[in-house]
Length: 323
Length: 246
Ligand SMILES: Nc1ncnc2c1ncn2[C@@H]1O[C@H](COP(=O)(O)OP(=O)(O)O)[C@@H](O)[C@H]1O
Ligand SMILES: [Mg+2]
Image (cartoon, rainbow over all chains, first blue to last red; front, side):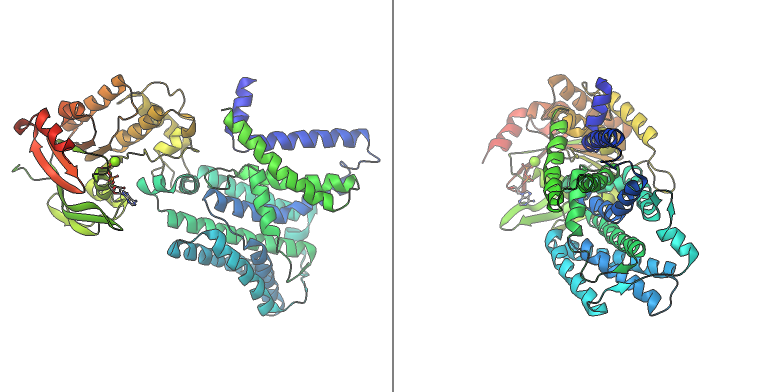
């Protein structure tokens, strides 16, 4: 038992895992006891829940990796829209294959991330400032490139539908994308040497330099991951919904940071985990779902997520103090 | 000193704004020798150590390795070109990472694709922590650095340097947080290194320790080298006087 507790404590996702399981158990028991009034276990509810979290989840993974490396990207919300619109126009106006268009959209996101990272590196200014500017830049860029009207995006191809909008029972394709991105970055962050460098650079940049790691290069990679994930989440969300709103996306960057913080990422860098980020995202949407099921008015959601952020950080800090 | 110096730097200067941290410093490391780098706080010892490690870029000066002029401007270059390994005064560890990940930070053991071999790194960490300069009290290499005492952190930094050492080991106040017994082990280790053809530079405030292991003493003050003598040509009194004179 003690070993089990120590194990939970030493994992960055330990606290959030405990909180997540507790809430799931309560919700599942309530769902079993009152299947008519509290439809948590209803397949339709589960399907909506899984479907809704993927866009934020994919974005949060990129944002979290950048946070582990000690930097922020506030522009991911508007970049998400920008890249989705680039992808859609590639298909609609240049008749490109939707897969190729998707790759182009992601490359645009990666390039945007590289630009942010290069500015941060070259002028050694805080990424908070650079990406605050970039946030407005991509928002304006979207309007410049496309205008303010909403863009429909339905691609009539069976395979495309299956790959991006299909489902297996209650599991939506977008959720599988989220899981796939999570698994890939789990291996990169926790098992590849570049992952070790993310933690080193975010945790103690002087030590990283002293030992021969180039923080600028590492940060550049993290910025490009954040940009690429934002783009992918934009394309996945657009495909699922079937349209994009040029003014949309703004605000998602803060939700993504919230998911990371709830998931145990340190605001100052050097700590965090992919599992934590994924659970943080899942927790935000579980809370939203539970409130909907309880027929709570919408503003409760923000209040609860606000409380959750603080609660999760308190749990994480308390658990760590007792090591 | 007719023997060819393995490492040499000449006319090295480094300014931080108005402050001259290194003022026309000439310094060399011979083959199979232990150099004591001494001086009051703020004398520029750590700056010189960091300059040699490639972490601090000098404003002026030339560096020679094996008699050949060389440019060393990153940590990787000092490691690859001059075979330098350093124990920094501040240890250079990440608190939120495990001992294993700190030991292999930047030099991870990986497969062809860059994925880490955790098992191998763990085994080697255990080995280096237990052999060489064994320092007690670290039960698992999976512990995070933040959970260690000051002495244990220093031990990890020493273990890392011991594992990766090649030609020159630079030790910047390596024993400041260690117990008497642990300090003796480190000092003994430094003398043993000579038989493996590894030279060292040790920065310390303890002149008794310096006299125990060093072959030559270099005293710095206000960024300048003010005194330099072989052990056989000097004594504790003279070196002490040089270190404390203003
Ligand atoms: N990064 C830095 N920025 C500004 N001043 C520095 C920096 N590093 C060292 N110094 C200054 O350079 C001088 C020499 O420092 P240091 O080499 O650390 O001395 P020592 O190791 O001999 O105690 C000190 O006055 C110190 O304040
Ligand atoms: Mg010093």
